[in-house]
Length: 272
Ligand SMILES: O=c1ccn([C@@H]2O[C@H](COP(=O)(O)O)[C@@H](O)[C@H]2O)c(=O)[nH]1
Image 1: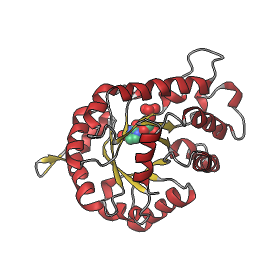
Image 2 (image 1 turned 180 degrees about the vertical axis):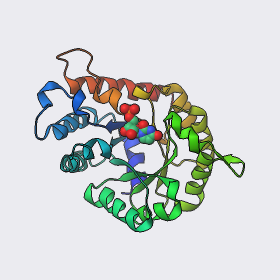
Image 3 (image 1 turned 120 degrees about the vertical axis):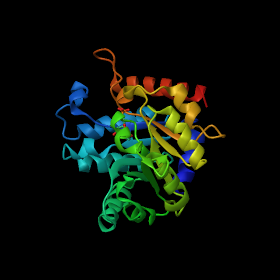
């Protein structure tokens, strides 16, 4: 099954547009996992097990693993998700961007080494830096478009022939780069007006939408701006708000993550 079909099936089977982000930060780990040789894997596994029936995707952010030299644990997390929850898409958030030959190696890393169903990529270097990912026709290529951070406006709002750059990226991906119908776009929940603009430009193309939870994006505005006619079309990501949901000492971190994931999934569903 290709990425788009797998995502569509997960939206339906879990009745969810929630993407659970896996951003393991040792300084926020529960005490029992600190100092454990496989603590990162154990933490992510517990979160995955606690939220797998509530999520339409899991999104490990590679920087949180690589910064700790924990790529082997990222491999183990990805393998665990693929083997235990093969119906839930695995999105590797890597935001790579480089010349074609190097992009091919990054694609191998994402799709072959980690077995990701989809990977995030940076469009700044243009079509030949994104095209190598498209050779894996059954995998997703999720292109940064209107990112959730305030500084994204520095470049993404620049006018290019009468339209902002982020809209040019959306149209390029939808009309030209999407050679196997496998593309998606990153659009931040912190900018619902721009999210609506992108939705109007790209039809039913899936959107990865970070920015709710810790970044404060409004769920109602996000869903109303980005949903398709079928009430789907988005992977709305929350990472820290779910991962570090524990409110009082002694509370089980996985149970707390489940509680917040369920509340978030349900709030999203209220506006679909
Ligand atoms: O525009 C973007 C693109 C990616 N991200 C990533 O999403 C998560 C957000 O984490 P929260 O804890 O829910 O804020 C993180 O991995 C970012 O690298 C983004 O935030 N914005």
